[in-house]
Length: 335
Image (cartoon, rainbow, N blue to C red):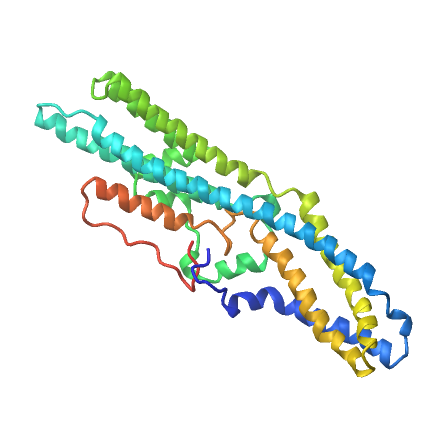
């Protein structure tokens, strides 16, 4: 996620320089054929070209709105996970009963800590799992290359990420499962049942805590729905195809309009075509780079920063003083 109001040029340039060079060469070639070789038949009426451009603009706008909806839904889900995580910590701290036995009370403090730390491991597992690339995202593109060249954004393995919250034996057991995040919630539920049977949690509070686990399952499932179901290809592909059809025919319509002014105005086709084609191509790229918000790309939801904020809040609730620092943007990108 970008943290600045304007996207810096060094980020925009890798996305556009090849396209701009292509547009310049293509329009220059057409102008040369028109002026030098006298291929005046290349000029066509601008009305049908403008009609195509209007239709493409509506279609690309629909695609970009749909892509933004996926991105915003993902951010809302992680906002819900943040709120539910804080609620979970408060419930754990208040619902696990104290006793008059100092030894038991000390043990309960460790149990509370384990429940909260296992939850931190859970959201970490969700984050790592979501950033694993699916089959349709195995190709490299500029949006991923920008992230991959920044060392601070290098993805760590799940076991290394979990080592901050769990013991080695627990991690070894967890990573055996196909979905470590769901297994961690299962472990949470099992420990809650043990506490309820031991009388450390009332039946009412036990139901309340289990309801929170269901909420985490719901939010994780919502993330997995976005992750596992790509933006429908029939919309994405034809948006790309229609954009390039319009770009291909645009200079022929511009020739007609420029020729109405004077002979040398023909060469204004080059800059005008390049600008218009760049705008349409950029709109198409914006939609493409926003449709999958969990792909470790520059337009990702900043899950690492969100998880760190949750960790700081929950460990602060535990009374810890040595808290990690908040994640800072690197090159104006927050992950």
